[in-house]
Length: 271
Image (cartoon, rainbow, N blue to C red):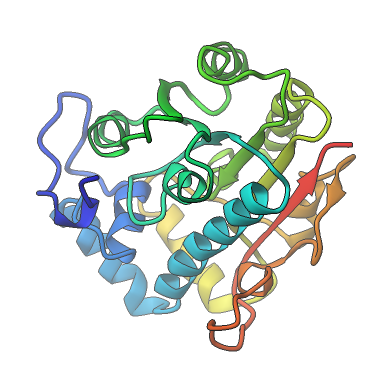
């Protein structure tokens, strides 16, 4: 498999506006990737000048996702994943983590950004035993997502829904809760929900930096309270340790001692 960090920067695309910073490309920059433009690096550097801890949040978020997927495959026996709002490919993408343990795992990625989809199709190869697919759909278009996902996944079997740093892009919290409910309602008992998002109430410097970013003209990302993030899991059975800063979610023995950060997440099972 080609490693994204070794690939050239993104080519021009008629639907890609390279004059405005893009959150997925900035996130890729903070993760050490190459799939971004000067405007993204400038915005990323301006953000880290105010709040250097955003790089820790970005990398801790990715590590949380890796630990979630490892648990789902190795301990919960999940073999199907619906990753909505996948972002740009970096290291340890959902299918890479899942298929290392279970080569037969099947993964559907969803995004509506042309650059993300182009890079995903070019770089994210499945094992021969499993499958990956890519859906061009908005996170709010749940009917389209589910119809297209059913072409690759058997949605009568337990499936893990992954929503990593995507719900903050839905401005209204009740609308975000509604789309989570609609997607989970379509999945059978034994399915799982994995959510992690930027949170308020931990680090006021982070909150100030994010509020300033949202006012810059870039696509905003809304930080939510821990209570609001917890509400996404209503009616589900939380996996220990519940909703916590992502650094505290089942850290590995080799990890440094976890510190609280403004990014909360959790994993829960549909009864």
